[in-house]
Length: 137
Image (cartoon, rainbow, N blue to C red; front, side, top):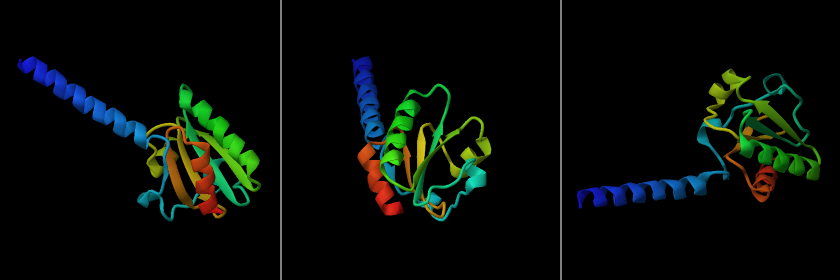
């Protein structure tokens, strides 16, 4: 009987974690640590967009990174003055550590001055990215 109780408890905890993880993945949100951090062309390896920049941290074998690349490319093509820059996290470990990037894909939304205004981990929805750009512009 004790084994059954333990099994049910483990399943309940694992289910709760799965639901929480799914709800948080891909959400674009403000992170207190990012406030005030500025990134320039030297750190990003490319020029900033006139109005905003979408910075994506990816890794080689990340399936959601490919879908994120497509979503961000579509948004950058739709909104004038917005640029999409993709950074290989493995090649830029110092920047990953500085920005506290814990998983890929991670997307940073930068304003025209290069300040981080929003962050998303996981595959973001196109509507959420467009809404975050509205605040950055």
